[in-house]
Length: 342
Image (cartoon, rainbow, N blue to C red; front, side, top):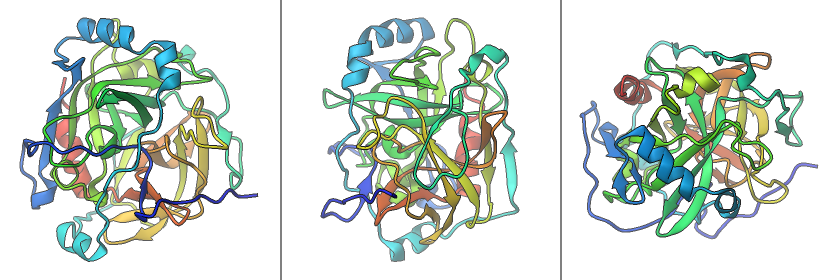
């Protein structure tokens, strides 16, 4: 029996985010449209810039004890902006030829994968192997600990994670990005089996950071190496696709944490996406819950390799449908800014 979800009276349920009021965030490189301007932020550990890998690891690992990770929760609902008429004007779309701009990369060591099976939903039709290129994201905001999901993405520097914009910044125009951010690839049975990895820099877009527009709800995170090794070399990385059809067979992977799920291991759902608004897609009747946000929509999933192509990220649920921003050349521009950061 497929599980139906209830919703808050605001009508939109983002899967993990919070709301604060701060001064306007600073933006970086300009893209063609105003909201498409790149927004960049230095990661912080205990409020201090995360400038070197050893310090980030020492302080981050001391903070994220097993007990603290267990106690972290999906964050409360934010005030994301959902305005279909405004969406078409703000993000008309830059859709070129379909492209795979990054290919999936297997781990350099075959021991990186645990070989465990992701847990399926009621509409799943196959057994799916858990991916070492999907993990649980942890962060602190307003002295509270939260989590969502993310995916390792192959890039020239082998150090990139994709997630939702609301998993790095509250989307309120503030200058403060989430603190003590950490990524636990293939988090399984409540254990960070590949260790915790810590960020150096966040790359998102002004449409999310300054305005909270749901059609811009995505981000990339540049990660420090761990023990001298780069993230993608250890866990492998998903590919990245843009300009694909909005009607597409996909696999969703993440860490939902509301009943019947526990957020302790990967869960998946699968189906065919449809167009939603001007520049969003949706998967109908998706039972995944809060905690899964930031996890990937994956096309061309290879169950033996355990990787596919990130084609969107889980953003929010409404009327039982899972929504994500459509990945077109606007998203490619942001990836191109992030992919060569060291």
